[in-house]
Length: 300
Image (cartoon, rainbow, N blue to C red; front, side, top):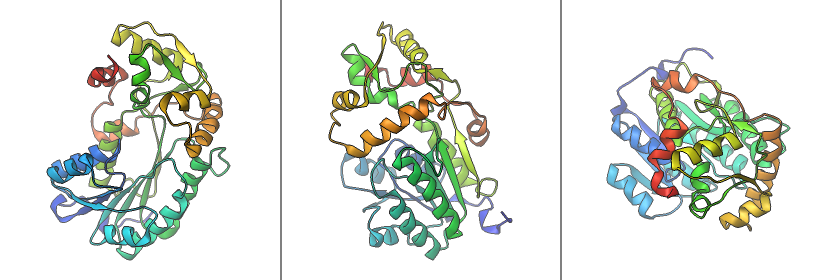
């Protein structure tokens, strides 16, 4: 991609950044870090609640809207120079990306940071993952400079099963030998903010991002046990059982996605490590031991 003077490092106070998924795992710390660095932040939230109120208290301009409503996206995009696009595991991703890209193009947005999947590819088994690949293409076609973050499993997966761990079970829907390097959402936020601060080296790139250490699921369970002083064997359950344990048995998009990802895991598509994140952040990634200690109250 040719050099673009708009993508030079500038005074943050002159830039407004739109953050979608602003009350989620990556959105919330992204909003906080951007504000700390002096950016103006517009946070798009699905509803008003204590999470959106916290963003307002920090100084963000919170707009309640729907990522599948073009009018909402256009309103949120007004006056924005840079943006973070994050869509949940749900239907409608490609349609939302089309609307987001069009609104960004109309506003001459300088950069979009796009949350994607590590195993993003045109022939993905998971519709959600395939939709992420298609959305990457949409942003590239739009002509708006974009950076795609292809991320392995979050360390936050441990928080999803924290209620089970409290009750004495360590259950996952993945083969115990399947490997990945969990990455903390706060580190992902630091990477996002690093790119938004200095877009020029990153525009047009797709980065595979991992945590600092690769584990099998069984090895990760052993680390959790060691840090928490527990002795919970790794329990491989079906996707259906897993969703029932989490109270998500009626979430069809989750079910289909997890069923596909169990195979992706077995084929090694979420494995690996890298130094991209540490280079962008300028500091080491959080270890899984640090993550568990930081969230210890969730497990015990």
